[in-house]
Image (cartoon, rainbow, N blue to C red):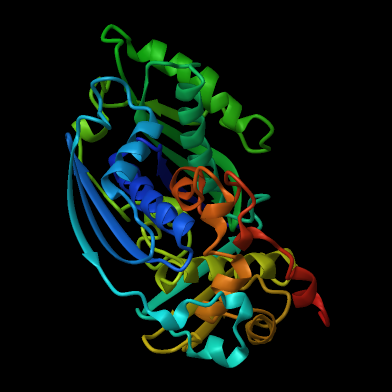
Length: 399
């Protein structure tokens, strides 16, 4: 008899202060790389009320007005008047300009194998990639739905379906599992900030969110809320004050919603605010790519790829594969096929995903869109690490 369990994931919209900080940090990365694809840049952001603090270390030929980039990112979110002002907020900065390492000013596409071996990582991390059969995106069901709800809240605000919504909302989805299979929606929670509607009551808010947010998200889903599903809308009361005016934010505090919603392991390192030479960012993309292809190849129902890197090395010092008992072949056999078909060296990851040049290919930026639209799964465009082009190679020789 299978065991029924419950798992819950949560997400936030683009106006949540933590997410605003992620967006600003990645907007800075985009601007540097658009001008100079060989830029080295790490940016961190914190904000509260009407103050934005930006710390950046960079080595680049680009000339970037970082405070102006931050203001533009805030303006693009579209806060209501009085919630948070891109033009009136105070931007405090701390910058460290460094000399550019000339040895890496060569496109990885032109590097020989020996040159890629000399392109080493400059920080240490253990990163994880995960995939499973629960959704078409090969991601856990709870975080997929939580992120969809967050994006639908944003769409309802931007498209004026619910014009009074704040840019700062949060979502949470509880899912019942029969073994490893999601079978029922246990609960849905929406915390929605509002603006300019002081007389709006809980019943009207709940009705609007059901029609414009919850129903569209579950349309077409095999698993939907049922009569027993608990749906909570602002259970502690109306929020007429939200966003940075109500609470503070910082880059990298939403790593669970950036990755697997807590269903699978993640390193805890911020993904945003880092250029492609930071292995603690791109290693997460490489590990996800490998895990997704293992599942797409039918080698396992669930797969976790663990990559450990140490300073001064180009290759990961450790690669581990876990299938949680769902593999069709042994984990050792899967690991061998992964090592044969994926190059986890830093330079190879940058080259194979084209990570230096993606911002220039997207006029409005590439990395800045990932926090709001998703680092994994269905995002604003087809992400290179979401391809399953290696699945046929992994499947060759399968018993």
